[in-house]
Image (cartoon, rainbow, N blue to C red; front, side, top):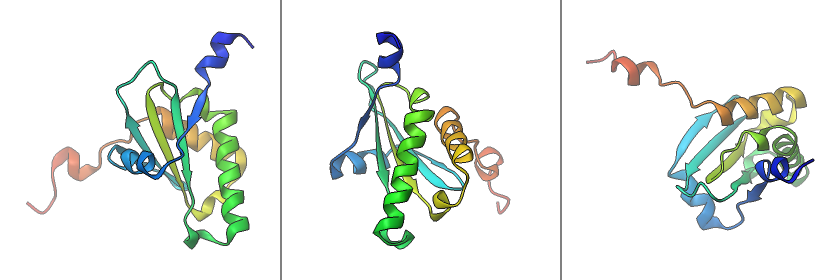
Length: 130
């Protein structure tokens, strides 16, 4: 692998609570198995950073760690290449992360990272209750 290809797939980590909270102010992209929060830091020279959140309501520590490991591997294998430099991503797991086939999980994650969510009907045309 060349150094150019390696640098494009480099993904840093979000580690502190203030970093995670800052990403909440950004864009949310809902998925069936996870919620993806994205924040453009307006720093295109820096690497993308990613953080993972799995709440206690989704199972015991063993299950939560398994969810986190599956998401980390999906980012490492496929989704890391789609992450834009200068952006922060937080992936909030849902329980379905445990049961969905890994290939489908990686594909969903890649799609959510690449594509912005489509506007809802109420945002496009206004609410039906006018």
